[in-house]
Amino acid sequence: MRFAATLLFLCAALSAQTRPAASRRQTVEHSPGFLKLVDEAKSRIRQIDIEQYKRMRASGQPHLLIDTREDREWAEGHAAGAIHLSKGIIERDIEKQVPDRKTRLVLYCGGGYRSALAADNLRRMGYEQAISLDGGWRAWQQSGLPVEK
Image (tube, rainbow, N blue to C red; front, side, top):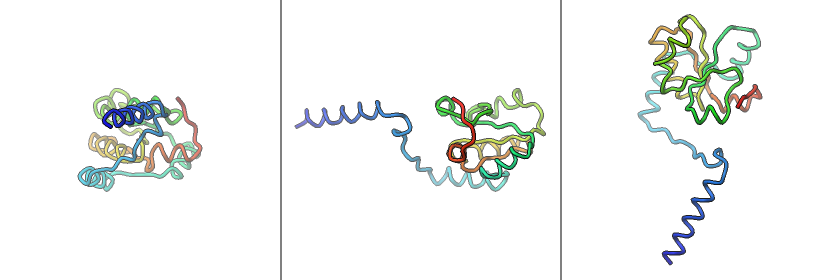
């Protein structure tokens, strides 16, 4: 019986490894402390949804699109024309990449949580036009806007 259980476990593990990454992902359940932190950040920053972003883009408003997701997420696909400064390094590297603090920055992550935190930190660093894209990468993909790999 123990052999059969071990065999079932190994088969399930192997099956999970051979499925595409997107189907292996689980829905992330955010902790209350994290959600409180994000809500506080969102109260201090500007957010736009994907329709507002499309209008901004169509009107030619200058901006820099920044993907704040992790390296693996970026490599799997990202918004066309975006630069990559993950949440883990954006505060460290932003001044080298974007020295002009008046630049309009539109930040996105998977759904709008990490980008809100990053926008809040950038705001505190003097980047007054740091905007979080609510809905993030998921909204981008659903919108039909161009994607790169």
